[in-house]
Each structure stands twice: as structure tokens, then as C-alpha cells.
Image 1 (cartoon, rainbow, N blue to C red):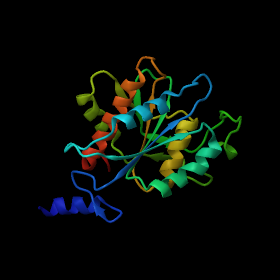
Image 2: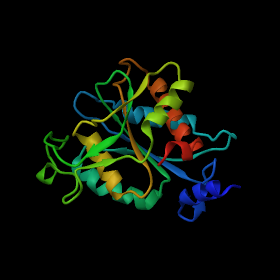
Image 3: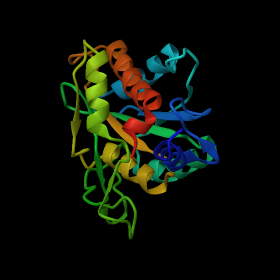
Image 4: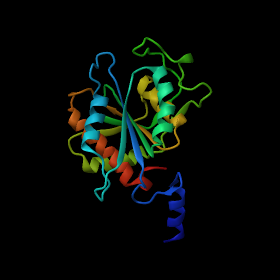
Length: 224
């Protein structure tokens, strides 16, 4: 191989394993949120579960390892759970999913540390309304979101997928920042619309599947 290719392969060495066109035994961690407010059944967790039932695969047909978790809509639980999940699962890619008023699926590009004034389901807000004391004002994902959106648009016909630069300053933004702060692998956050407004849980699950498979099958093109 050329020197440029060897250098690129070295750049994408992860925990001692060289990452080429196909990921080397990497696990994807995907989370969805539990009920809150009017969302007695949270579309994010329903979509994550259905996606897990469908399974994820590489282009050669082999399975992508997947771990899923439901996260309560509670700031303190997120603060406690996220670092533990990174240590337990050691994911190669982490995907958090939450519900939003958007009428399409949106991949978030930025997570912010301040401004968490809205109370969680326990009636609490984080200390000083921050994710991480002393943390930077914002974290940007290392995933090339615009590239991923373009790839998904080529394969997914029934669901509109776009991007956003504002994850909302609630638990979605909070878990995104917390994960980007503590994690040592790429992280994205995906917002899905409420159930059947306009998409079914199956359509949302398929959209998640397309997003994750696009990243895992074209890692060097989709991750900085």
C-alpha cells in the first residue's frame, strides 16, 4: 500500500486494533430515553429496541455488535450512568437517541455545557445548570455529520434525515455533552420525532439502522 494509506490506517488505530474498511470487532452502544411529560411511550427507546431486533450489519453480511440501554430522564442518573457505560461497554461508537418536536430525524453536531434550567422528571436541575463543572462551553462530535446525512439520503427513501446545531438544553443535550466529555470514541446524538408524528417506530428504527451502518461501513470517510 502507499505511504498515504499506511498513515491513514495508523491514524485510525483504536485500542490496539487497526481499523480498515471494516471495523475490527467494534461494539456500538445505543441509548434511548424513558418516559417523560406527555411521552408516556418514548419514541426514542421504542425505535432503539426495534432497531436492535432488526440487527446491524457490515456490507459483507456479518453482524455489528450492539449494546442498547434505556436511560431515565433524570440529570443525576445520566451523570452517574454515562461514565459507567463507557467503562463497561467500551464502545467503538456511541449513539444517543432522544425525542424532539422535529418532523424529521436530525443528527446533532454540537453539545453544550450550560443552560440546563428545565427540570427533569424528578423536578431537579443539575448543579449550576451545567453538565460538567469546569468543562469547556461546547463539544463537537468527531463524526462528519453532513457526510453521514448525505450517505443516508442515498439509501433511505421514506424518512427525512437532516442535521442540527442545537440539541435543546434538556436531557438530550445533557447526555450528549456528558458522553463527549467522558468518552474516548466517537459519539453522535440522533433526535427522532414523536411516535407516528409522522413516522412509525419501525420507520424510525430503520433510519437509525441506516445512520449507524453508514458510519460503521465507511468509518474513514465519516469520522475525523
